[in-house]
Amino acid sequence: MRSLDAFADDKLAALDTKSLRRRLTPTRRHDGAVVERDGKRLVSFSCNDYLNLSQHPLVRAAAAEAALNYGAGAAASRLVTGDHPLLSDLEKRLARLKGAEAACVFGSGYLANTGVIPTLVGPGDVVLIDALAHACIWAGAQLSGAKVIKFAHNDPADLERLLLSERGKARHAMVATDGVFSMDGDIAPLDVLSDLCERHDAWLLSDDAHGVGVLAGGRGSGALFPNAKIPLQMGTLSKALGSYGGYLCGSQAVVDLLKTRARTLVYATGLPPASVAAALAALDLIEADPTITKAPLAKARLFTQRLGLPEACSSIVPVVLGSAESALAASASLQDQGFLVVAIRPPTVPEGTARLRVAFSAAHDDTDVIRLVDAIAELRGAGS
Image 1: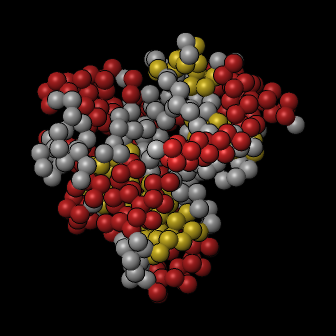
Image 2: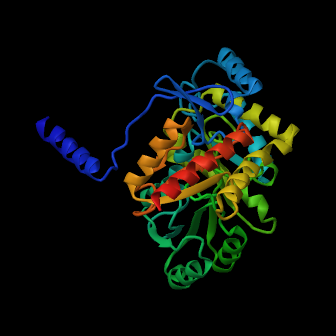
């Protein structure tokens, strides 16, 4: 229809004007930290495969064997015929990793949060969300019909103020945050948040997509705070575990409820066997040698120390440049020098904070990290 195309064209033109239009770029990954774009090989500092396990021979072999034994897809919802035997094995392993009674595997991390939150809260409830939490947390909260309130980033005092104001008006309350924030790399004060939630009878949900496999011997950000009580531990299989999918670890009662009422599980096809087998193989590798989980943070700290930035506390380091145009120009310059560091622009990050999001993996050589430091230092000097 002409009106539909006109609407789309107008939206795209407005995005072009602000340098906010996004385009897909076919990218092939090779061994190590190397990717190929437009026929050019680049050292990638943009992948979330923090342990490079998606390329590990044992992980790839496990995925291939599962596809041969169980088929390429799950064929149906898990509640119909899609609950293949590997899924229960993976859920037991995830629950053990996170120190929980049980786990529920979803088709992706986005599906996990948009399924879990509306299952547990609804009209008459309140969800308090860290201002910089991932988009899927906000989406899940908005789908729930609960009252949704933002609290200042990593600010327990602001959260407590809001709990004092809002908790008494709500039937149930949930506090939702990233464990490791995906665009800033900082860590939520889960111990303090846990104490606040205990005092105000609120349910704490931590999205640990970027912490599992990287922090605390692979157990994730929650394990950095041994006394924290986190009843809802969400995560993904698609980053440090090198596969695909999402999960929620919690009590047996909560998991049983999710498996019968979470719409993104009930009405979605189950995770393919190859993805499940790959995640199981990755967990085997981490369990056999937890020291591999230390490498990404070590590379990130080498980077921040050499560049004079605050010490990294995860495998993610932002280099904030301000405008979308400056971030795009910096990314293009680095690509010309053989690096892939994708520019992150609004609305993914707040207006005026467009950046290079630098992600470190066990596959990076220190020499490449230092070369990137030199290249970014030169760019920052030229822009000052």
